Length: 254
Image 1 (cartoon, rainbow, N blue to C red):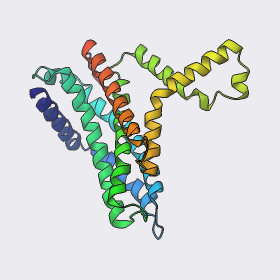
Image 2: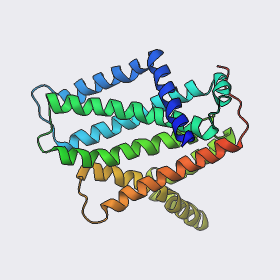
Image 3: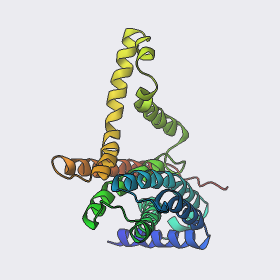
Image 4: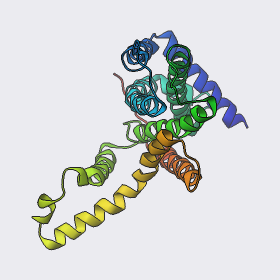
């Protein structure tokens, strides 16, 4: 129980530092610009699919910035002092992760409130709003966990390059296919196709979650999509915590 309490305390401390340093202004300015450009749309109504499409993309893009800012806040020599105050490594890393998720969730909540007040989607009620929000925020959690795992705080440069290489191979079917793929030697083509298929499987829950947010149709295997998103999130977080606990900590002096 003390571990959870210290994790929440450190999360609150990091959030307070993020607000006190005025870093949150970037998210707020980006949120206002996004809202007035894509959602306010004077004189034009929006539908649910449009709302979840643009908001889902925006939250993922904003997660890239916020995560890097939070990692920069945690990757400082002052971290040694915090870790010496009975905050475990897992609590330290989870505190940074929860801070990012809390900020993005808060921004998303403000966007939802503004949209509901000024330009509510014509085909979206409260129930479907919640159903679309769940897989969208799970994707935010997955993205944040992946970025945390790939940060210098957790993985060394070699492992980061290796993981990024695997991700590049998984997405390579978008630009290596058709005639280009057929031009490769037979064994090379089979190996690349197999690698693309195998490595793309971990990406399926995130893409299916995005599709579920757009459709909000929870009949059939929809709950399996949510379970797959949660499983992927836990797997990435578990790997990040394991790697962080085993490596020597050298915080950046920049």
